Image (cartoon, rainbow over all chains, first blue to last red; front, top):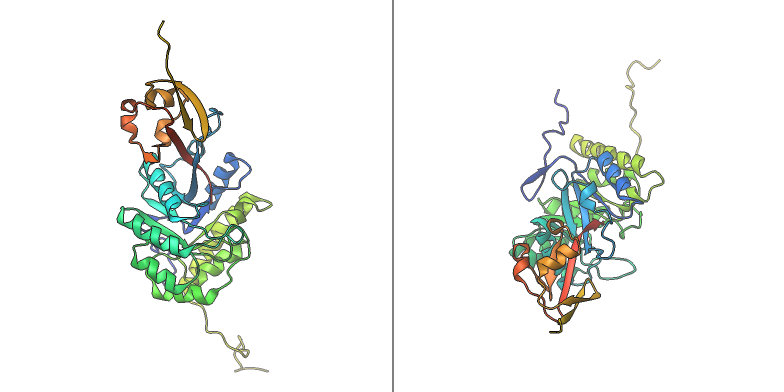
Length: 262
Length: 72
C-alpha cells in the first residue's frame, strides 16, 4: 500500500528546497531567546525579518543574528512598514547588501488601520525587483486577477492574506484562494491573519503550499506550545490534502453495511 | 596653532560632530558597528562595504546603518 510520503513531497521556492512548509515571523516576541526557541519548536527553516536602523547609542544591544543563525535558517527580509514602492525597494536593496539576500518578501501596505496591501505599488515593485535579480515572494490580496499579474511580472511566490495582518481572524475567503490555487503553479503561501493552528490546516487542505505565521504564535498564551501546534497542523493539513478528501453529500450515508442486519 | 575643523553629519537620524576628513571606516569602528551584519547608506546611496576606508565624510552627510531585527 502506498502511504503519503512527505519526504518525497518537496516544498520548493525559487529552485530551493525547504524542509518545512511553515514559515514564521520573528516579531512581537517578549525576548530574542523566546523567539529563537519558538522557531526551533515550529520546525521552520525560513523566518521573516525586518530591516531597521542600528541603535548607535546602545552598542551592547543583542543582535537577531546572535540568536538565529542565518547559515542554518533562511532569513527572508521583509518590507513590513513600507507604504510605497520607493520605500520597499530601498529596504530590500539594503537587505541584499547586508549579506547577499536575494530571496525577499515584498509587502507594500496601503492603509495604516486595516494593513491591506497597496496592490498598484506592490505590482510595480515586483516588476522592478525581479528585473534586478531578486526572487520576490509577494504579500497580496486574495484577488485571482492580481495574483496572475504578479506572476506575469516575475513573482516567485504568491502570498495572499487570510485576513488582516495580526487580526487572528483565520481564512475568510476560501473560494478566492481555491481559484488562485487552480490558476498558478507558483508556491501559494498564506500570509497574515491566521489565529490558531487549525487555520493552518485549512489553508493546507485548500491546496496552499505553505503558511506564514507570526502573531498567532508570538502572542499565544504559550508561544512554544502554539509553535508546535502549528508545525503539526501544517503537516496534518498537507497530508490531508494529498490524501484526497471524500465528496460532500447533503444526506447521510451509513458506515455499516445493511446486509446481515438482524 | 591651527584650528581643527569639524563637520556635522547625521547618522541614523542623530546629529554627530566629527573631525573633518574622517573616513567612513573610522566612523563605524568608533561606533563599534559589526560591519558584516549591517548595510550602510550614504546620502541615500548604498555603500560597498569594501570601500569604507576610501570614503571621506563631508559636512551635512546623511548616513543610515541598518540591520535585521525581528519582524513579521
